Image (cartoon, rainbow, N blue to C red; front, side, top):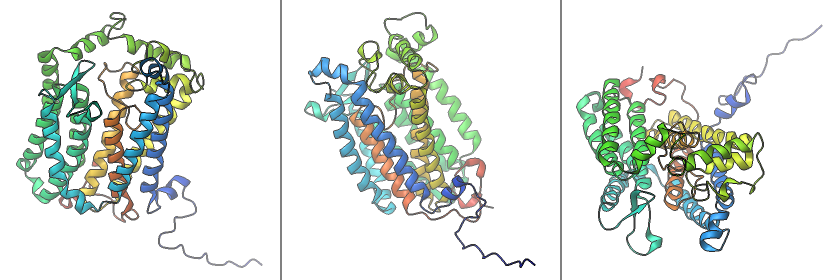
Length: 412
C-alpha cells in the first residue's frame, strides 16, 4: 500500500521545477546585471581580438607595427572599463546630477565642430581636436549618452504632467537641436540619435500621434538635409541605388564587404586569415566593416554569435528596465539598450548593403577611442542601474505593449 505524502511548499522566490532554464535564469534577482556584464564583456573582448586581426595589414603599412591599432584598442578598452566600473558604482541620484552638465558639454562640443577646431575625416567634419593629435575625439558618440541620461532625468522629473502633450515639447526641442547639430556633419550618427529619440518617446509613453508626426517630419528633414548639404553622403546614397556603378569609389568597400562575408562560409577562413584586409577592406575592415572581417575569418557561426550577444545584451537591458520601479533608471537602461540595438542594426544593414554607407561603428566591437569609451561608459551605467533592482514585480507593468511603461498614470 503506497502512502501519499504532501510535497514541501516552494520557497517564496524559488522557481517551480517545471520552469525552463531560461525562465529560472530570468527569475534570478541579479540576472539582468550578470547578463549585461557577460554579454558586454564578451563583445568587448571580441572587438579587441578582431581589431588586432583586421587592422594588422593597415597597421604595418602605416606605422610599421602590425599590432599598432590592436594595442591602441586594448588601451581604449582598459580606460573604458575603468570608467565603466566607476559609473556602475555611481548612485543614481549622483548620475541624475550629472545629466544637465553632460548635456551642456555635448552641445558645446558639437558646436565646436563648426569652428576651426573641427576636423574632417572621410568626408565628415565630425571630429574635434582641442590641442595635440591625441586630444582628437568624436563628440557625437558622447552626445548619445548625454542625451539618454538627460532625457531620462527630464522626463522622470515631469512625471504625471506628461499627460499633457505640451509637457513633451521641451524634451523634443532639445533633442531635435542636438540631432540637427550632429546631422550636418555626421548623418549616420544623427540617424542613430534620431532613432534613439523616437524609441525613448515610445518607451516613455508619449502619444502615438506625436511619435508619428515626429517620425514623418524627421524623414522629410533627413532627405532635405542630404539634398541641401550635397556632400559625400548624397554620393553614397546614389552609389547604393546603383550597385553596379561606382565600383572603385563609394561601392568599393561595400562590394568587398560582401565578398568577405561570402567567402567565410559556415566556419570561416580562420582567425587572421582574411584576404579582404589586404585590399578592399584594408582601411575600414577594423572600423565600419569589422563584421565583414568577422564573417570572413570566423564564418557565419562567428557573425551569428556576435549578433546573439547583442540580442542578449539588449534583452537584459530591457529586462532590467522592466524590473525597476524607478522611472529614471528604467529610462536610462532602456535608452542605452535601444542605442546598442539600433546602432548595431544600422551597422549590420550597411555591411549587407541594406542601407547606404553611413559611417556607423559596431558598438563595443569596432575600432575607435570615442566609440569604445562612450559605449563602455554606457555599459557601466546600464550595469549599475540593473544591479540594485530585485526580482520581477508581482504585477505586470502597465502597458506591456510599450515594453517598459514607466508612469504611474498608466498603471492598472
